[in-house]
Image (cartoon, rainbow, N blue to C red; front, top):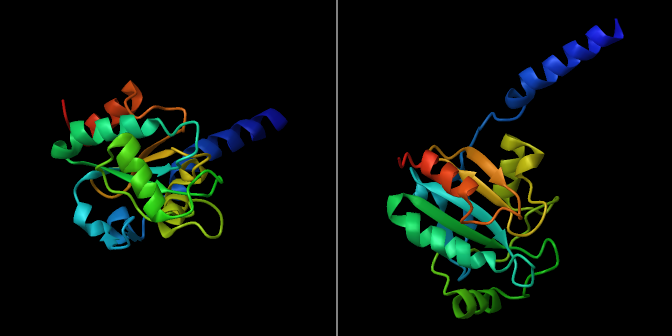
Length: 184
């Protein structure tokens, strides 16, 4: 009896897993965030494009991933990918001013993809992008560390998430970007 109840519970968990949260009252393009220079980025401007959202930090062991993010941007921008770097001090590894972050990224990595202001990415003070991601994709969309990646598809919904350990130019990310952009 216990075994059959257990099997039924597991079946229910897996069956309803994907339906529990992804109600998408809003899509990514309905949100806004400030650029690193302070101007409002209305994400509607990226409608129809895929967006790789990455929470970044200047003092993290993964900071060299900026190089890979820039390469992704250069390789796929013309095909419809936006790399959106969101500097964050949520893990206590970011510079204290937007100006310093911008200078650090330009001088050390020649970053040309869009960066936002320093932003909270977890907890009660998280930016609405990350609250939206959690609401629609569950805990797997909450950054566990710096350089966590969330891929938004061309419909403005979460396609996949990637851990900080997954390098931007990894086959796993490239394959998912190409599938999302329908590059064959």
